[in-house]
Amino acid sequence: MITFENDYSCGAHPKVLQRLIETNLIPQPGYGEDAYSESARAKIRAACSCPGAEIHFLTGGTQTNAVVLASLLRPWEGVVAAQTGHIHVHEAGAPEALGCKILALPEHAGKLDAGELRTLAATLLSDENVEHMVYPGTVYISHPTEWGTLYTRDELSAISSVCKEFGMRLYLDGARLAYGLMAEGTDVDLPLIAELCDTFYLGGTKCGALCGEAVVFPRQAPAHFRNFIKKHGAMMAKGRLCGVQFDVLFTGGLYYEIGRRGVETAARLKTILARHGVPCFMDTPTNQQFAILENDRYADLRKKVPVGFWSNPDGAHTVVRFATAWYTEDAWLDELDTILS
Image 1: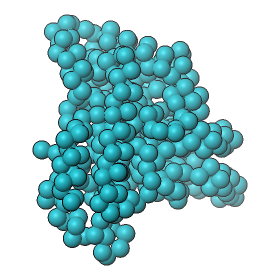
Image 2 (image 1 turned 60 degrees about the vertical axis):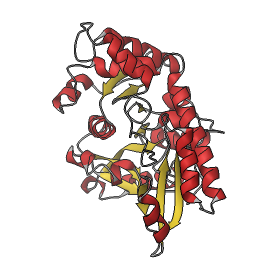
Image 3 (image 1 turned 45 degrees about the horizontal axis):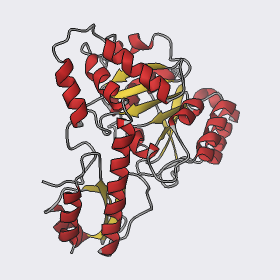
Image 4 (image 1 turned 135 degrees about the horizontal axis):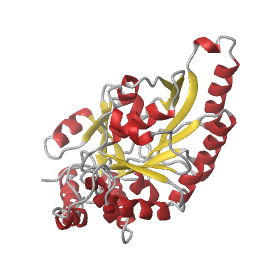
């Protein structure tokens, strides 16, 4: 069966799965205090050029976003996000359930604009009725965005500067970060992200792990963060599960290899779409490609290969997401080529 529905349809990368088997019967302490988690933390610190970083492992992206944002925000604060941001659209109100009001700004190819962010913060904080309003306390961005687009070094630096100017924290959702780091032409790397963001996470679930995300606080985590994780039911007794996986992902460049594979197969997919006269909704350099199909063609395609519905821009067309990943096979692309013929 071929699929382009998402980037988590398969389980774990074989190297990750093999290491889980190898370590399965070796007793270790619980709650992330095992040797594998410590080894993974050391490797992630080195990759980020951030020797003092505090790193915690959680099991999924929605859980991570909700818990991290709730820990960053004070009771009178909200989180700024793009209208298309994952926390605003596709997390079923999980951040709000923990008390995090979302302050939405317009999106530009999925991204926030630093100028609009500054206007929002300046306007709210200068309002004479501000004590009756929600203060902007944290800014949420994703890299890649929900549209598969990427921030540039200058864009990320500008947003970080606005955050510092107004005392806001900057949080980067890296659910698909491996694919963003390996995109052609990007000038954003892990050390830069660690320098400019107050916290971010390295996605594992969509980047080769069975499950798991690595939350990185480059300088200082909120007080008693481990206690906060536990309070929200997010601390695994068998913390080794995530530790083992990230230890493998950050050994021998596997995380980057996984990202490169997803980007390379997406580039070939884009070529196939163009050859068959299928336009892209926007140009994306990562593993997510968004195609515009006539409704009838979309209905026919989905009977033959799983793809992701994204939006209906008008009554006659559907925007469809094709997602590649580390497990996407060349034979799948060949079959898609035939199906579109």
